[in-house]
Amino acid sequence: MSKFIIKGGKPLTGEIAVSGAKNNAQIMLPVSLLSTETIVINNLPRIDGVEKSLELLRDLGAEVTENGNSVQINTAKVVNTVLEQKIADKIRTSIMFVGPLLTRFKKVKFPHPGGCVIGASGRPIDLFLEGFEAMGAKIEIEEKFYNISADKLHSFEYFFPIVSVTGTQSLIMTACLVPGQSIIKNCAMEPEIEALVNYLNSCGAKIQGAGSPTIIIDGVEKLSGGIMEIIPDRIEAGSFALMAAATNSEIKINKCNPKHLLSLLTIFNKIGVNYEAGDDFILMKKSDSIIAYNVRTHEYPGFPTDLQSPYVVLMTQAKGISLIQELIYDRRLIWTDMLSQMGANIIMCDPHRIVVNGPSLLGGKKLFSPDIRAGIALVIAGLIAEGETEIDNIYQIDRGYEKLDERLRALGADIKRID
Image (cartoon, rainbow, N blue to C red):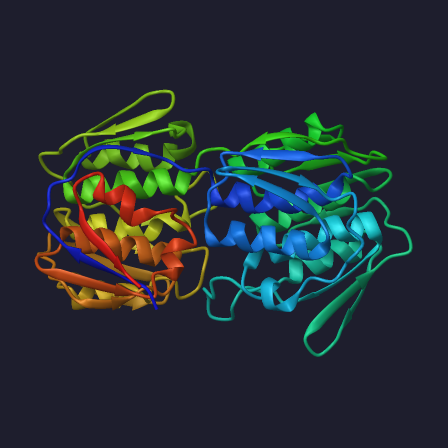
């Protein structure tokens, strides 16, 4: 199992470019199943979830041509409608293949999707299944597989009982080829959803309302191929900004969209983090003092749950007491026990709330990355800490951050990968 060895306290400086958005890229790959024409995807991050999704496409019969961070996909010869269990149960976004296969072939068989297990009861797919049923699909559950079929899908109206990003994207993808007008309410409003809808509309879809709670889809007979540019990863950009603030480093973050990070930048304005934002960059500067500030995670455009972990690390270096509330995923703050082992003053109130009292002097420890976002937070803590930090199970970090160790070394970090 691979791990990082980090020697903290090294000054960081320079420029770092943001990769294509993980949560946009892994959705765009199954979109290729909606058309028999070729789709070209650029600015594709080469992370594990993307590789697994490409593997799934090939297993289904798609023709895939790769060229660095670009990929060309044609699914005209796809006839297989069964998602291979050995691949699908390793990534959460395997569920995103279900809608396109269902709307194109009227049947699909798949295992429960894998990926990060965060929350007290894992990550259920009830919202997806309810949406498919609303458009006329029949669902049968075998021992290890779901079988979904429909003689004919029809237009529908569906209200999400809880806001779901992938649920919203899945129903959009499925409904765009279903005859009639479908209406989805209480939708997620993330930039990745707008990017998906903009691409689909460029290929002939008729979708209104992306970026709002209500999305209206008028079904069309077919979609053409097209060219998609994956948007910048706002979570990676935010992680790097928090890393710079926590290590009090001057770092220019390039190829990002600061407008997607207004919740974080607004907090920076309040707590004394010194930065400058342009159209496609954030220049993080050294700060004289950072003040503790309470945060509640919330659906976009609120504070992202995926930035909660690195924000906690920043609060260990801030002056005062901060209350961090995780309102999206149950038990997602459990990882902070490892920060306590490093010397942070953290009180766990309950699975949803912690109190951080800073600033704290952190020391190197042997740690284990439980998921993507806790993993990047532990890397940031290791960069701050005195001594050597060892982080095991970095496969989880690699799932969200492409070549992280190489990019951090370019900033002056003392980090190496041990395989």
